[in-house]
Length: 320
Length: 320
Image 1: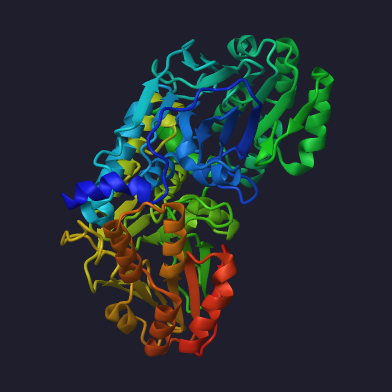
Image 2 (image 1 turned 180 degrees about the vertical axis):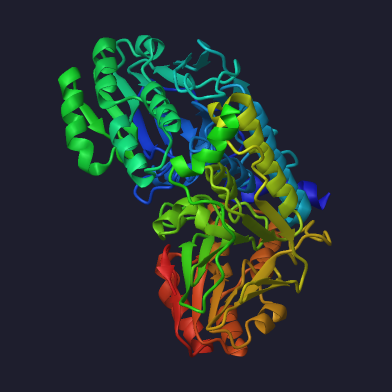
Protein backbone atom coordinates (compact mmCIF):
# COMPACT_ATOMS: atom_id res chain seq x y z
CA UNK A 1 0.00 0.00 0.00
CA UNK A 2 2.69 2.38 1.07
CA UNK A 3 4.73 1.31 -1.93
CA UNK A 4 1.87 1.87 -4.35
CA UNK A 5 1.29 5.34 -2.98
CA UNK A 6 4.97 6.16 -3.27
CA UNK A 7 5.09 5.01 -6.87
CA UNK A 8 1.99 6.99 -7.75
CA UNK A 9 3.28 10.14 -6.15
CA UNK A 10 6.88 9.99 -7.17
CA UNK A 11 6.61 11.72 -10.53
CA UNK A 12 5.04 14.60 -8.63
CA UNK A 13 7.56 14.65 -5.83
CA UNK A 14 10.59 14.42 -8.04
CA UNK A 15 9.43 17.11 -10.39
CA UNK A 16 8.85 14.75 -13.30
CA UNK A 17 6.36 15.48 -16.00
CA UNK A 18 3.24 13.39 -15.92
CA UNK A 19 2.86 10.69 -18.55
CA UNK A 20 1.92 12.08 -21.91
CA UNK A 21 1.98 11.12 -25.57
CA UNK A 22 4.84 12.48 -27.65
CA UNK A 23 4.08 16.03 -28.71
CA UNK A 24 2.81 16.54 -32.25
CA UNK A 25 5.50 17.98 -34.50
CA UNK A 26 4.77 21.59 -35.29
CA UNK A 27 6.08 22.74 -38.64
CA UNK A 28 8.91 24.59 -36.99
CA UNK A 29 12.64 24.76 -36.98
CA UNK A 30 14.39 21.56 -38.08
CA UNK A 31 17.90 21.09 -36.70
CA UNK A 32 20.30 18.18 -36.96
CA UNK A 33 22.77 18.05 -34.06
CA UNK A 34 25.81 15.80 -34.33
CA UNK A 35 26.00 14.70 -30.69
CA UNK A 36 28.90 12.30 -31.22
CA UNK A 37 31.15 12.26 -34.29
CA UNK A 38 33.74 9.58 -33.51
CA UNK A 39 34.19 6.54 -35.70
CA UNK A 40 34.11 3.99 -32.87
CA UNK A 41 34.53 1.62 -31.16
CA UNK A 42 37.89 2.83 -29.82
CA UNK A 43 37.03 5.68 -27.43
CA UNK A 44 38.39 9.02 -28.61
CA UNK A 45 39.08 11.78 -26.05
CA UNK A 46 38.13 14.41 -28.65
CA UNK A 47 34.87 12.96 -29.98
CA UNK A 48 31.89 11.18 -28.45
CA UNK A 49 30.68 7.88 -29.89
CA UNK A 50 28.10 8.07 -32.71
CA UNK A 51 24.80 9.73 -31.79
CA UNK A 52 22.70 12.40 -33.45
CA UNK A 53 19.69 14.49 -32.54
CA UNK A 54 17.07 15.53 -35.08
CA UNK A 55 14.90 18.31 -33.67
CA UNK A 56 11.65 18.94 -35.54
CA UNK A 57 9.91 21.64 -33.57
CA UNK A 58 9.34 20.15 -30.13
CA UNK A 59 9.97 16.62 -31.33
CA UNK A 60 13.39 15.18 -30.44
CA UNK A 61 14.56 12.14 -32.40
CA UNK A 62 17.75 10.38 -31.37
CA UNK A 63 19.60 8.67 -34.23
CA UNK A 64 22.04 6.07 -32.89
CA UNK A 65 23.04 5.94 -29.24
CA UNK A 66 26.74 5.38 -28.65
CA UNK A 67 28.38 5.56 -25.22
CA UNK A 68 27.50 8.83 -23.49
CA UNK A 69 24.48 9.61 -25.72
CA UNK A 70 22.40 10.57 -22.65
CA UNK A 71 25.14 12.97 -21.55
CA UNK A 72 25.48 14.51 -25.01
CA UNK A 73 21.72 15.04 -25.10
CA UNK A 74 21.96 16.96 -21.81
CA UNK A 75 24.71 19.11 -23.32
CA UNK A 76 22.39 19.79 -26.28
CA UNK A 77 19.72 20.92 -23.83
CA UNK A 78 17.44 17.90 -24.14
CA UNK A 79 16.08 16.33 -20.96
CA UNK A 80 16.07 12.50 -21.18
CA UNK A 81 12.27 12.11 -20.91
CA UNK A 82 11.90 14.48 -23.88
CA UNK A 83 13.25 11.74 -26.14
CA UNK A 84 10.32 9.67 -27.34
CA UNK A 85 11.89 8.20 -30.48
CA UNK A 86 15.19 6.49 -31.26
CA UNK A 87 16.35 5.17 -34.63
CA UNK A 88 19.31 2.75 -34.61
CA UNK A 89 21.18 2.46 -37.92
CA UNK A 90 22.88 -0.85 -37.14
CA UNK A 91 23.90 -2.96 -34.17
CA UNK A 92 27.61 -2.30 -33.94
CA UNK A 93 28.30 -1.34 -30.35
CA UNK A 94 29.74 2.08 -31.06
CA UNK A 95 26.18 2.90 -32.21
CA UNK A 96 24.29 1.18 -29.35
CA UNK A 97 26.62 1.28 -26.32
CA UNK A 98 24.79 4.21 -24.73
CA UNK A 99 21.36 2.59 -24.84
CA UNK A 100 21.69 0.88 -21.47
CA UNK A 101 22.51 4.09 -19.61
CA UNK A 102 19.80 5.95 -21.48
CA UNK A 103 17.03 3.45 -20.74
CA UNK A 104 18.12 2.66 -17.17
CA UNK A 105 18.67 6.26 -16.05
CA UNK A 106 15.33 7.21 -17.55
CA UNK A 107 13.82 4.39 -15.49
CA UNK A 108 15.63 5.54 -12.35
CA UNK A 109 14.30 9.06 -12.99
CA UNK A 110 10.83 7.53 -12.71
CA UNK A 111 9.74 9.02 -15.99
CA UNK A 112 6.72 7.27 -17.45
CA UNK A 113 6.89 8.94 -20.87
CA UNK A 114 6.81 6.52 -23.81
CA UNK A 115 9.90 5.62 -25.81
CA UNK A 116 9.74 4.02 -29.28
CA UNK A 117 12.93 2.40 -30.57
CA UNK A 118 13.29 1.52 -34.27
CA UNK A 119 16.15 -0.53 -35.67
CA UNK A 120 17.25 -3.55 -37.70
CA UNK A 121 16.43 -7.14 -36.79
CA UNK A 122 18.11 -7.91 -33.46
CA UNK A 123 17.07 -4.61 -31.89
CA UNK A 124 14.23 -6.21 -29.95
CA UNK A 125 16.43 -8.91 -28.44
CA UNK A 126 19.06 -6.28 -27.60
CA UNK A 127 16.55 -4.04 -25.80
CA UNK A 128 14.91 -7.04 -24.07
CA UNK A 129 18.29 -8.02 -22.64
CA UNK A 130 19.02 -4.47 -21.49
CA UNK A 131 15.63 -4.42 -19.76
CA UNK A 132 16.50 -7.75 -18.13
CA UNK A 133 19.73 -6.15 -16.89
CA UNK A 134 17.67 -3.34 -15.34
CA UNK A 135 15.38 -5.86 -13.67
CA UNK A 136 18.36 -7.88 -12.41
CA UNK A 137 19.79 -4.73 -10.84
CA UNK A 138 16.50 -3.73 -9.30
CA UNK A 139 15.75 -7.17 -7.90
CA UNK A 140 19.21 -8.22 -6.83
CA UNK A 141 20.45 -5.40 -4.75
CA UNK A 142 18.82 -2.11 -5.48
CA UNK A 143 17.14 -0.23 -2.70
CA UNK A 144 15.00 1.75 -5.09
CA UNK A 145 12.79 -1.16 -6.02
CA UNK A 146 9.90 0.34 -4.07
CA UNK A 147 10.26 3.59 -5.95
CA UNK A 148 10.57 2.00 -9.36
CA UNK A 149 7.66 1.51 -11.71
CA UNK A 150 7.17 -2.24 -11.85
CA UNK A 151 8.22 -2.96 -15.40
CA UNK A 152 11.05 -1.04 -17.07
CA UNK A 153 9.69 -2.19 -20.43
CA UNK A 154 6.19 -0.85 -19.83
CA UNK A 155 6.65 2.32 -21.88
CA UNK A 156 9.22 0.92 -24.29
CA UNK A 157 8.12 -0.07 -27.77
CA UNK A 158 10.61 -1.67 -30.15
CA UNK A 159 9.92 -1.95 -33.87
CA UNK A 160 12.27 -3.90 -36.12
CA UNK A 161 12.40 -2.50 -39.64
CA UNK A 162 12.96 -4.12 -43.01
CA UNK A 163 14.53 -2.66 -46.14
CA UNK A 164 12.27 0.10 -47.46
CA UNK A 165 10.16 0.36 -44.29
CA UNK A 166 8.37 3.65 -43.66
CA UNK A 167 7.39 5.14 -40.31
CA UNK A 168 5.10 8.13 -39.79
CA UNK A 169 5.67 10.27 -36.70
CA UNK A 170 3.03 12.96 -36.97
CA UNK A 171 4.08 14.96 -40.00
CA UNK A 172 7.59 13.50 -40.00
CA UNK A 173 7.93 10.66 -42.49
CA UNK A 174 10.87 8.31 -42.01
CA UNK A 175 12.18 5.78 -44.51
CA UNK A 176 14.78 3.07 -43.84
CA UNK A 177 16.90 1.70 -46.66
CA UNK A 178 19.48 -1.06 -46.51
CA UNK A 179 22.96 0.33 -47.09
CA UNK A 180 26.20 -1.51 -47.89
CA UNK A 181 27.91 -1.63 -44.50
CA UNK A 182 27.56 -5.41 -44.37
CA UNK A 183 28.43 -6.47 -47.91
CA UNK A 184 32.05 -7.51 -47.61
CA UNK A 185 32.78 -8.79 -44.13
CA UNK A 186 33.52 -12.51 -44.02
CA UNK A 187 30.62 -14.24 -42.32
CA UNK A 188 28.46 -11.20 -42.89
CA UNK A 189 26.23 -13.07 -45.26
CA UNK A 190 23.39 -13.68 -42.81
CA UNK A 191 20.16 -12.68 -44.53
CA UNK A 192 18.89 -11.00 -41.37
CA UNK A 193 21.90 -8.73 -40.94
CA UNK A 194 20.68 -5.26 -41.92
CA UNK A 195 22.35 -1.88 -41.71
CA UNK A 196 20.22 1.17 -42.52
CA UNK A 197 20.37 4.65 -43.93
CA UNK A 198 17.40 6.83 -42.93
CA UNK A 199 15.55 9.65 -44.63
CA UNK A 200 13.48 12.08 -42.55
CA UNK A 201 10.97 14.19 -44.50
CA UNK A 202 9.52 17.03 -42.47
CA UNK A 203 7.16 19.75 -43.75
CA UNK A 204 10.01 22.18 -44.21
CA UNK A 205 13.19 20.18 -44.57
CA UNK A 206 14.44 16.74 -45.57
CA UNK A 207 17.44 15.09 -43.92
CA UNK A 208 19.19 11.87 -44.97
CA UNK A 209 21.56 10.02 -42.63
CA UNK A 210 23.73 7.42 -44.36
CA UNK A 211 24.63 5.40 -41.26
CA UNK A 212 27.85 3.46 -41.78
CA UNK A 213 27.96 2.48 -45.44
CA UNK A 214 30.06 2.01 -48.50
CA UNK A 215 29.02 3.34 -51.91
CA UNK A 216 25.34 2.48 -52.38
CA UNK A 217 22.91 3.26 -55.16
CA UNK A 218 20.03 2.73 -52.73
CA UNK A 219 21.37 5.38 -50.35
CA UNK A 220 22.00 7.73 -53.27
CA UNK A 221 18.39 7.29 -54.38
CA UNK A 222 17.19 7.84 -50.83
CA UNK A 223 19.15 11.10 -50.69
CA UNK A 224 17.69 12.52 -53.94
CA UNK A 225 17.04 16.24 -53.54
CA UNK A 226 17.49 16.19 -49.76
CA UNK A 227 18.12 19.49 -48.02
CA UNK A 228 20.79 17.89 -45.86
CA UNK A 229 22.86 14.75 -46.32
CA UNK A 230 24.73 13.57 -43.21
CA UNK A 231 27.32 11.05 -44.32
CA UNK A 232 30.07 8.97 -42.78
CA UNK A 233 33.55 9.39 -44.23
CA UNK A 234 36.88 7.58 -43.99
CA UNK A 235 40.01 7.49 -46.08
CA UNK A 236 40.79 3.82 -46.62
CA UNK A 237 44.29 4.46 -47.93
CA UNK A 238 45.35 6.53 -44.94
CA UNK A 239 43.81 4.02 -42.52
CA UNK A 240 45.46 1.06 -44.25
CA UNK A 241 48.90 2.65 -44.26
CA UNK A 242 48.54 3.44 -40.57
CA UNK A 243 47.40 -0.07 -39.61
CA UNK A 244 50.09 -1.85 -41.59
CA UNK A 245 52.80 0.49 -40.35
CA UNK A 246 51.84 -0.55 -36.81
CA UNK A 247 51.54 -4.21 -37.83
CA UNK A 248 54.14 -4.83 -40.55
CA UNK A 249 53.80 -8.62 -40.29
CA UNK A 250 50.14 -8.68 -41.29
CA UNK A 251 49.77 -11.44 -43.90
CA UNK A 252 48.68 -10.42 -47.40
CA UNK A 253 45.35 -12.28 -47.17
CA UNK A 254 44.41 -10.33 -44.05
CA UNK A 255 45.55 -7.08 -45.63
CA UNK A 256 43.23 -7.78 -48.52
CA UNK A 257 40.32 -8.53 -46.20
CA UNK A 258 40.77 -5.29 -44.30
CA UNK A 259 41.20 -3.28 -47.47
CA UNK A 260 38.04 -4.87 -48.85
CA UNK A 261 36.13 -3.93 -45.68
CA UNK A 262 37.34 -0.33 -45.76
CA UNK A 263 36.75 0.13 -49.49
CA UNK A 264 33.32 -1.48 -49.80
CA UNK A 265 31.76 -0.82 -46.38
CA UNK A 266 32.87 2.78 -45.77
CA UNK A 267 32.82 5.98 -47.87
CA UNK A 268 35.95 7.76 -49.08
CA UNK A 269 35.97 11.55 -49.59
CA UNK A 270 35.58 11.05 -53.33
CA UNK A 271 32.67 8.64 -52.89
CA UNK A 272 30.92 11.01 -50.48
CA UNK A 273 31.35 13.88 -52.92
CA UNK A 274 30.04 11.80 -55.79
CA UNK A 275 27.04 10.61 -53.78
CA UNK A 276 26.17 14.18 -52.76
CA UNK A 277 26.47 15.47 -56.32
CA UNK A 278 24.49 12.69 -57.95
CA UNK A 279 21.77 12.92 -55.32
CA UNK A 280 21.62 16.68 -55.79
CA UNK A 281 21.57 17.41 -52.06
CA UNK A 282 21.62 21.05 -50.95
CA UNK A 283 24.10 20.60 -48.07
CA UNK A 284 26.52 17.91 -46.92
CA UNK A 285 27.78 17.16 -43.41
CA UNK A 286 30.54 14.66 -42.69
CA UNK A 287 30.52 12.68 -39.45
CA UNK A 288 31.73 9.29 -38.09
CA UNK A 289 34.97 10.92 -38.98
CA UNK A 290 37.86 8.49 -39.42
CA UNK A 291 40.19 10.96 -41.12
CA UNK A 292 43.13 12.26 -39.08
CA UNK A 293 43.06 16.04 -38.54
CA UNK A 294 46.17 16.56 -40.64
CA UNK A 295 44.50 14.94 -43.62
CA UNK A 296 41.24 16.89 -43.47
CA UNK A 297 42.43 19.66 -45.84
CA UNK A 298 43.18 17.10 -48.56
CA UNK A 299 39.83 15.42 -47.95
CA UNK A 300 38.09 18.80 -48.28
CA UNK A 301 39.78 19.39 -51.61
CA UNK A 302 38.73 15.99 -52.86
CA UNK A 303 35.11 16.44 -51.81
CA UNK A 304 35.00 19.91 -53.40
CA UNK A 305 36.20 18.41 -56.68
CA UNK A 306 33.10 16.21 -56.84
CA UNK A 307 30.46 18.24 -54.98
CA UNK A 308 29.93 21.97 -55.54
CA UNK A 309 27.49 22.57 -52.64
CA UNK A 310 28.29 23.64 -49.10
CA UNK A 311 29.75 20.99 -46.82
CA UNK A 312 31.27 20.76 -43.34
CA UNK A 313 33.17 18.28 -41.18
CA UNK A 314 31.09 18.06 -38.03
CA UNK A 315 32.32 18.32 -34.48
CA UNK A 316 30.40 17.08 -31.44
CA UNK A 317 27.34 19.21 -30.69
CA UNK A 318 27.44 21.09 -33.99
CA UNK A 319 23.99 22.02 -35.24
CA UNK A 320 22.96 22.09 -38.93
CA UNK B 1 38.48 -22.23 -41.09
CA UNK B 2 38.70 -18.81 -42.62
CA UNK B 3 36.79 -17.46 -39.64
CA UNK B 4 39.15 -19.09 -37.16
CA UNK B 5 42.13 -17.63 -38.91
CA UNK B 6 40.55 -14.19 -38.98
CA UNK B 7 39.80 -14.35 -35.29
CA UNK B 8 43.29 -15.51 -34.45
CA UNK B 9 44.92 -12.80 -36.50
CA UNK B 10 42.66 -9.90 -35.70
CA UNK B 11 44.42 -8.70 -32.58
CA UNK B 12 47.53 -8.46 -34.71
CA UNK B 13 45.88 -6.81 -37.66
CA UNK B 14 43.97 -4.25 -35.65
CA UNK B 15 46.94 -3.27 -33.60
CA UNK B 16 45.61 -4.80 -30.40
CA UNK B 17 47.88 -6.06 -27.71
CA UNK B 18 48.07 -9.81 -27.40
CA UNK B 19 46.30 -11.48 -24.50
CA UNK B 20 48.13 -11.14 -21.25
CA UNK B 21 47.53 -11.39 -17.54
CA UNK B 22 47.02 -8.13 -15.67
CA UNK B 23 50.36 -6.55 -14.91
CA UNK B 24 51.67 -6.92 -11.37
CA UNK B 25 51.34 -3.68 -9.42
CA UNK B 26 54.71 -2.10 -8.96
CA UNK B 27 55.04 -0.03 -5.81
CA UNK B 28 54.78 3.14 -7.82
CA UNK B 29 52.72 6.25 -8.06
CA UNK B 30 49.18 5.90 -6.73
CA UNK B 31 46.64 8.32 -8.23
CA UNK B 32 42.89 8.58 -7.78
CA UNK B 33 41.18 10.20 -10.79
CA UNK B 34 37.57 11.36 -10.44
CA UNK B 35 36.39 10.49 -13.97
CA UNK B 36 32.79 11.50 -13.34
CA UNK B 37 31.58 13.58 -10.39
CA UNK B 38 27.86 14.02 -11.02
CA UNK B 39 25.26 12.83 -8.55
CA UNK B 40 23.09 11.02 -11.10
CA UNK B 41 20.84 9.79 -12.58
CA UNK B 42 19.78 13.06 -14.22
CA UNK B 43 22.46 13.78 -16.85
CA UNK B 44 24.41 16.96 -16.11
CA UNK B 45 26.10 18.84 -18.94
CA UNK B 46 28.91 19.89 -16.59
CA UNK B 47 29.72 16.55 -14.95
CA UNK B 48 29.97 12.96 -16.13
CA UNK B 49 28.10 10.21 -14.29
CA UNK B 50 29.92 8.53 -11.37
CA UNK B 51 33.15 6.74 -12.29
CA UNK B 52 36.64 6.78 -10.80
CA UNK B 53 40.05 5.49 -11.76
CA UNK B 54 42.56 4.24 -9.21
CA UNK B 55 46.01 3.97 -10.77
CA UNK B 56 48.53 1.92 -8.83
CA UNK B 57 51.63 1.88 -10.96
CA UNK B 58 50.58 0.20 -14.20
CA UNK B 59 47.42 -1.23 -12.68
CA UNK B 60 44.20 0.59 -13.58
CA UNK B 61 41.17 -0.03 -11.38
CA UNK B 62 37.82 1.42 -12.39
CA UNK B 63 35.49 2.20 -9.47
CA UNK B 64 31.89 2.51 -10.65
CA UNK B 65 31.01 2.85 -14.34
CA UNK B 66 28.34 5.45 -15.06
CA UNK B 67 27.35 6.53 -18.58
CA UNK B 68 30.41 7.55 -20.58
CA UNK B 69 32.94 5.79 -18.30
CA UNK B 70 34.77 4.36 -21.34
CA UNK B 71 35.03 7.86 -22.80
CA UNK B 72 36.25 9.39 -19.55
CA UNK B 73 38.90 6.66 -19.33
CA UNK B 74 40.13 7.65 -22.80
CA UNK B 75 40.33 11.28 -21.67
CA UNK B 76 42.38 10.10 -18.69
CA UNK B 77 44.75 8.36 -21.09
CA UNK B 78 43.67 4.80 -20.34
CA UNK B 79 43.05 2.45 -23.27
CA UNK B 80 39.99 0.23 -22.65
CA UNK B 81 41.90 -3.08 -22.68
CA UNK B 82 44.18 -1.70 -19.96
CA UNK B 83 41.30 -1.96 -17.50
CA UNK B 84 41.42 -5.42 -15.93
CA UNK B 85 39.48 -4.67 -12.76
CA UNK B 86 36.19 -2.92 -11.97
CA UNK B 87 34.62 -2.43 -8.53
CA UNK B 88 30.94 -1.45 -8.45
CA UNK B 89 29.78 0.24 -5.23
CA UNK B 90 26.06 -0.42 -5.76
CA UNK B 91 23.60 -1.14 -8.54
CA UNK B 92 21.94 2.23 -9.05
CA UNK B 93 22.10 2.97 -12.75
CA UNK B 94 24.04 6.19 -12.47
CA UNK B 95 26.87 3.92 -11.23
CA UNK B 96 26.44 1.11 -13.79
CA UNK B 97 24.98 2.73 -16.93
CA UNK B 98 28.35 2.81 -18.72
CA UNK B 99 29.07 -0.91 -18.26
CA UNK B 100 27.32 -1.98 -21.46
CA UNK B 101 29.33 0.36 -23.67
CA UNK B 102 32.52 -0.55 -21.87
CA UNK B 103 32.10 -4.32 -22.20
CA UNK B 104 30.64 -4.27 -25.72
CA UNK B 105 33.15 -1.83 -27.24
CA UNK B 106 35.95 -3.82 -25.67
CA UNK B 107 34.47 -6.89 -27.33
CA UNK B 108 34.18 -5.09 -30.68
CA UNK B 109 37.83 -4.05 -30.34
CA UNK B 110 38.61 -7.76 -30.25
CA UNK B 111 40.64 -7.44 -27.09
CA UNK B 112 41.06 -10.72 -25.30
CA UNK B 113 42.52 -9.28 -22.09
CA UNK B 114 40.76 -10.45 -18.91
CA UNK B 115 38.33 -8.27 -17.01
CA UNK B 116 37.31 -8.96 -13.40
CA UNK B 117 34.19 -7.20 -12.09
CA UNK B 118 33.48 -7.05 -8.35
CA UNK B 119 30.22 -5.79 -6.89
CA UNK B 120 27.25 -6.46 -4.63
CA UNK B 121 24.77 -9.32 -5.12
CA UNK B 122 22.99 -8.76 -8.43
CA UNK B 123 26.18 -7.83 -10.27
CA UNK B 124 26.47 -11.26 -11.88
CA UNK B 125 22.91 -11.20 -13.23
CA UNK B 126 23.43 -7.64 -14.46
CA UNK B 127 26.61 -8.55 -16.36
CA UNK B 128 25.08 -11.79 -17.67
CA UNK B 129 22.22 -9.79 -19.18
CA UNK B 130 24.58 -7.25 -20.73
CA UNK B 131 26.54 -10.13 -22.28
CA UNK B 132 23.26 -11.54 -23.59
CA UNK B 133 22.58 -8.14 -25.17
CA UNK B 134 25.97 -8.33 -26.89
CA UNK B 135 25.20 -11.82 -28.16
CA UNK B 136 21.76 -10.72 -29.37
CA UNK B 137 23.36 -7.89 -31.33
CA UNK B 138 26.04 -10.13 -32.79
CA UNK B 139 23.64 -12.87 -33.81
CA UNK B 140 20.71 -10.81 -34.91
CA UNK B 141 22.15 -8.38 -37.35
CA UNK B 142 25.78 -7.71 -36.85
CA UNK B 143 28.14 -8.23 -39.72
CA UNK B 144 31.11 -8.56 -37.43
CA UNK B 145 30.12 -11.96 -36.13
CA UNK B 146 32.93 -13.61 -38.04
CA UNK B 147 35.43 -11.22 -36.53
CA UNK B 148 34.12 -11.54 -33.00
CA UNK B 149 35.56 -13.92 -30.47
CA UNK B 150 32.83 -16.52 -29.91
CA UNK B 151 31.83 -15.71 -26.36
CA UNK B 152 31.82 -12.15 -25.06
CA UNK B 153 31.87 -13.55 -21.53
CA UNK B 154 34.98 -15.66 -22.07
CA UNK B 155 37.36 -13.23 -20.40
CA UNK B 156 34.84 -11.71 -17.99
CA UNK B 157 34.89 -12.81 -14.38
CA UNK B 158 32.26 -11.49 -11.97
CA UNK B 159 32.65 -11.83 -8.20
CA UNK B 160 29.81 -10.83 -5.89
CA UNK B 161 31.05 -9.56 -2.55
CA UNK B 162 29.60 -9.71 0.94
CA UNK B 163 30.00 -7.27 3.81
CA UNK B 164 33.63 -7.34 4.94
CA UNK B 165 34.92 -9.21 1.89
CA UNK B 166 38.60 -8.81 1.02
CA UNK B 167 40.19 -9.06 -2.41
CA UNK B 168 43.93 -9.23 -3.12
CA UNK B 169 45.15 -7.84 -6.45
CA UNK B 170 48.88 -8.38 -6.33
CA UNK B 171 50.04 -6.06 -3.59
CA UNK B 172 46.80 -4.07 -3.62
CA UNK B 173 44.43 -5.20 -0.86
CA UNK B 174 40.78 -4.24 -1.25
CA UNK B 175 38.11 -4.41 1.44
CA UNK B 176 34.35 -3.96 0.90
CA UNK B 177 32.15 -2.76 3.75
CA UNK B 178 28.40 -2.31 3.75
CA UNK B 179 27.50 1.37 3.99
CA UNK B 180 24.15 2.99 4.83
CA UNK B 181 22.87 3.93 1.37
CA UNK B 182 20.04 1.43 1.66
CA UNK B 183 18.87 1.87 5.26
CA UNK B 184 15.88 4.14 4.86
CA UNK B 185 14.25 3.65 1.49
CA UNK B 186 10.79 2.08 1.72
CA UNK B 187 11.00 -1.45 0.39
CA UNK B 188 14.75 -1.37 0.74
CA UNK B 189 14.68 -4.01 3.43
CA UNK B 190 15.75 -6.91 1.21
CA UNK B 191 18.56 -8.75 2.96
CA UNK B 192 20.48 -9.11 -0.30
CA UNK B 193 20.50 -5.38 -1.08
CA UNK B 194 24.07 -4.26 -0.43
CA UNK B 195 25.79 -0.97 -1.08
CA UNK B 196 29.55 -0.83 -0.48
CA UNK B 197 32.33 1.48 0.53
CA UNK B 198 35.79 0.25 -0.54
CA UNK B 199 39.24 0.57 0.97
CA UNK B 200 42.32 0.11 -1.23
CA UNK B 201 45.59 -0.47 0.60
CA UNK B 202 48.64 -0.20 -1.62
CA UNK B 203 52.28 -0.40 -0.53
CA UNK B 204 52.58 3.38 -0.47
CA UNK B 205 49.11 4.81 -0.08
CA UNK B 206 45.66 3.91 1.24
CA UNK B 207 42.47 5.19 -0.40
CA UNK B 208 38.91 4.84 0.88
CA UNK B 209 35.89 5.43 -1.35
CA UNK B 210 32.61 5.83 0.51
CA UNK B 211 30.29 5.07 -2.41
CA UNK B 212 26.85 6.58 -1.85
CA UNK B 213 26.20 6.49 1.87
CA UNK B 214 24.75 8.22 4.87
CA UNK B 215 26.60 8.48 8.18
CA UNK B 216 28.11 5.07 8.91
CA UNK B 217 30.32 3.85 11.71
CA UNK B 218 31.46 0.98 9.50
CA UNK B 219 32.68 3.36 6.78
CA UNK B 220 34.36 5.55 9.41
CA UNK B 221 36.19 2.48 10.77
CA UNK B 222 37.16 1.47 7.23
CA UNK B 223 38.62 4.94 6.66
CA UNK B 224 40.80 4.93 9.81
CA UNK B 225 44.15 6.51 9.05
CA UNK B 226 43.66 6.48 5.28
CA UNK B 227 45.85 8.73 3.17
CA UNK B 228 42.86 9.74 1.06
CA UNK B 229 39.13 9.61 1.75
CA UNK B 230 36.91 10.10 -1.33
CA UNK B 231 33.41 10.84 -0.10
CA UNK B 232 30.04 11.69 -1.55
CA UNK B 233 28.40 14.88 -0.33
CA UNK B 234 24.98 16.48 -0.56
CA UNK B 235 23.17 19.16 1.39
CA UNK B 236 19.77 17.69 2.27
CA UNK B 237 18.29 21.03 3.35
CA UNK B 238 19.16 22.78 0.09
CA UNK B 239 17.92 19.84 -1.98
CA UNK B 240 14.66 19.61 -0.01
CA UNK B 241 13.90 23.31 -0.35
CA UNK B 242 14.54 23.11 -4.08
CA UNK B 243 12.35 20.03 -4.62
CA UNK B 244 9.42 21.36 -2.59
CA UNK B 245 9.64 24.78 -4.22
CA UNK B 246 9.17 23.01 -7.57
CA UNK B 247 6.45 20.74 -6.15
CA UNK B 248 4.58 22.74 -3.51
CA UNK B 249 1.71 20.25 -3.33
CA UNK B 250 3.89 17.36 -2.17
CA UNK B 251 2.04 15.71 0.75
CA UNK B 252 3.69 15.81 4.17
CA UNK B 253 4.16 12.03 4.32
CA UNK B 254 6.08 12.07 1.06
CA UNK B 255 8.13 15.07 2.21
CA UNK B 256 9.10 13.09 5.28
CA UNK B 257 10.09 10.06 3.19
CA UNK B 258 12.33 12.13 0.93
CA UNK B 259 13.85 13.98 3.85
CA UNK B 260 14.51 10.64 5.55
CA UNK B 261 16.23 9.33 2.40
CA UNK B 262 18.41 12.42 2.03
CA UNK B 263 19.35 12.58 5.71
CA UNK B 264 20.07 8.90 6.36
CA UNK B 265 21.35 7.71 2.96
CA UNK B 266 23.57 10.63 1.94
CA UNK B 267 26.28 12.67 3.69
CA UNK B 268 25.93 16.36 4.54
CA UNK B 269 29.02 18.63 4.64
CA UNK B 270 29.03 18.42 8.45
CA UNK B 271 28.78 14.62 8.40
CA UNK B 272 31.60 14.34 5.86
CA UNK B 273 33.78 16.62 7.96
CA UNK B 274 33.03 14.65 11.09
CA UNK B 275 33.74 11.34 9.38
CA UNK B 276 37.08 12.60 8.02
CA UNK B 277 38.13 13.97 11.43
CA UNK B 278 37.13 10.91 13.42
CA UNK B 279 38.79 8.58 10.93
CA UNK B 280 41.94 10.71 11.01
CA UNK B 281 42.35 10.71 7.23
CA UNK B 282 45.18 12.76 5.75
CA UNK B 283 43.22 14.20 2.81
CA UNK B 284 39.56 14.46 1.82
CA UNK B 285 38.02 14.68 -1.66
CA UNK B 286 34.34 15.36 -2.25
CA UNK B 287 32.58 13.85 -5.26
CA UNK B 288 29.07 12.71 -6.33
CA UNK B 289 28.51 16.37 -5.78
CA UNK B 290 24.87 17.34 -5.24
CA UNK B 291 25.59 20.82 -3.91
CA UNK B 292 24.79 23.75 -6.23
CA UNK B 293 27.84 25.83 -7.14
CA UNK B 294 26.54 28.85 -5.27
CA UNK B 295 26.38 26.87 -2.05
CA UNK B 296 29.86 25.36 -2.25
CA UNK B 297 31.53 28.18 -0.25
CA UNK B 298 29.18 27.58 2.69
CA UNK B 299 29.75 23.83 2.42
CA UNK B 300 33.51 24.43 2.47
CA UNK B 301 33.18 26.48 5.64
CA UNK B 302 31.14 23.78 7.30
CA UNK B 303 33.58 21.02 6.39
CA UNK B 304 36.53 23.12 7.62
CA UNK B 305 34.79 23.55 10.97
CA UNK B 306 34.84 19.79 11.51
CA UNK B 307 37.93 18.66 9.59
CA UNK B 308 41.28 20.44 9.79
CA UNK B 309 43.04 18.55 6.99
CA UNK B 310 43.25 19.45 3.30
CA UNK B 311 40.14 18.85 1.23
CA UNK B 312 38.86 19.56 -2.29
CA UNK B 313 35.63 19.43 -4.26
CA UNK B 314 36.51 17.30 -7.28
CA UNK B 315 35.78 18.08 -10.90
CA UNK B 316 35.76 15.50 -13.68
CA UNK B 317 39.24 14.19 -14.49
CA UNK B 318 40.87 15.71 -11.42
CA UNK B 319 43.73 13.60 -10.09
CA UNK B 320 44.58 13.21 -6.39
